[in-house]
Length: 550
Image (cartoon, rainbow, N blue to C red; front, side, top):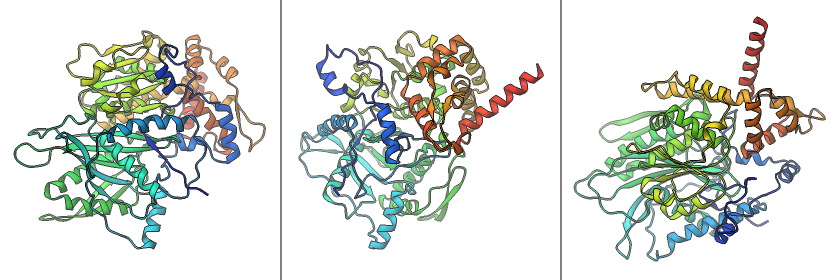
């Protein structure tokens, strides 16, 4: 059996039934972005035959908690035919090749981590494979002057440094680590020593060709010192999506960096050995700091695992409720959306918050919270995407057609630089007004906890009322048989004309298609057990009680 090579790319570009734009006029774009349309029904049956649901690999959230993906560098994994997705990863590999075009200098040596015995190493690899580690690795990135006198981002520290990998595993790890430098410093090589540089925290996603995702968390700051100096970026790669938790970890890393780079290691080692807590639980990490002694650092995971990666405050600070609804209308129909801002943290927080508004559905297409300058050509993709672009690159995106461009900058002249024109008419009017009414429960002083309650309570009922009757139209020929969704009857069951018009468009999206696949494939014994199912049942019970009173 041959070991498989797994290539990480920067986004997940999946096909949709929407036709490509200007395919005949642009053969370059046709060559890069067409021919990714697959037979989804064939994929369904194949997944059932293999006994492994592709949905399990591609969903990043679940009603039962957060799913973690299997490791990327483990030997002995079988490689299935990736088809178009594999071809698309080659496109991004070519982009990554640009990084090395003029880089002939020797890469800096990275500090080695503590070595473990074979037994300990095997146990840790098994634990890593099951997704129990807080993180896969931490790297420190800093601009360094190359032979041409230009400052370019390079990794100066990595923890842990893996040993015992075969050749192709080392090659894949090197590609991934070099890719991280793009996201830590998306501005590219335009760097020089600075006297001031505000600290900022942001995140991004690396997506494998099979759709599994890893989360990148980054804290960029200017080290303590006098005079002009170069900024540093601390980047953590993890299977876990929990922005707030890793922000606190970065606070601890930053404190230790002020003392010495060597102080980071024992803290990260303790963190790596700790079990990742269940939703609502806390893990305590012991850490020693000179002059302060041993401290206990408590890390608590939010109760609602599907909300732990978002901070709605930035979204509703940058946009009004009406503007958020306009963006929601575009994303729910899987359109191309670009957000523009100066701050990297603003871009990542807004994009992840917008994606969560779709719960219980999952965005299935390209999601790049911060597009590195070297990858700006991705905006030409004719397929749906959510992209974050820095303000200085705005001129390169406004000439695109059939998309929504949202300016998040404080000094903006207008919020929507480009739009399709029909965003205000996509959502049923009555349901849109209900969302606005629910959102009025928040205010400028609302805490993160308040927003995590108010915002889901505003948007989740939208899906309950439009598609919450889906289970009544999944027919099973036997208790243990796979269900079959009756789409025509499902749409006809909706009495409201405006709601039915919206649903007929929504059922054509990949997020709905994937959701229904999961509902068809799950055992009948699990029907009604998910979070969304329970909310639907609560709503239906409420409606029955209301009907009895009248």
